[in-house]
Amino acid sequence: MYDKRVDFDTVDLFTKRFNSKKKYSNLSQTVFDELNDLSEIPIHRTSGKYSKIGSGIKYYNNPKDLVNRLVLLSGSIKAGNNAAKVKNEFSSIAHTLRELNIISNDELENLIKNFLI
Image 1 (cartoon, rainbow, N blue to C red):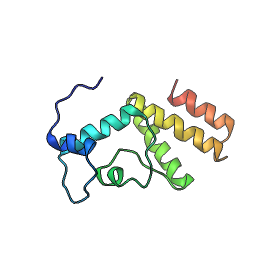
Image 2 (cartoon, rainbow, N blue to C red):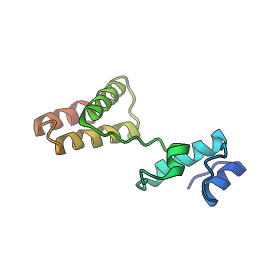
Image 3 (cartoon, rainbow, N blue to C red):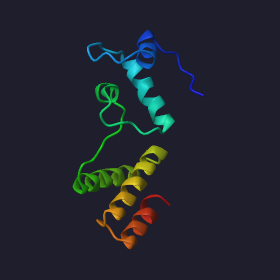
Image 4 (cartoon, one colour):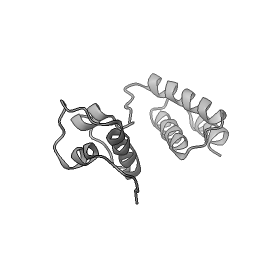
C-alpha cells in the first residue's frame, strides 16, 4: 500500500495520455518515480513518459560505464549507505559484469563478500 496525498498532476500523469508539453509538478514526478520503483516492472526504453518525467532508471551502454557505476556504489556502501536499493543495484551490476566476462567468478565472490555480506 502506498499512502501519500497527491495533486491533480499526479492523477493526470497516471490516468491520461502523456503530454510532453505539460510541466508536471515535482510531487507528481516524485510519486511517479516511487511507484515505479516499488512496482519493479520493467520500463520500456522508448517510453516518452519515462524519458521526460524520469524514472530513476539508467541504462548503461558499455561495460566501462558499468564498472564506473560499480565503483561509485562501492564507495557509497563503504561510507555507510546500506539501503537495499543501493545494494541491489550493486549486486545486479556485479553479476552483469560477470556475465560479460569482465570479472571472474573469484572477483564476483570477493565483491559480494566485501560489500554485500
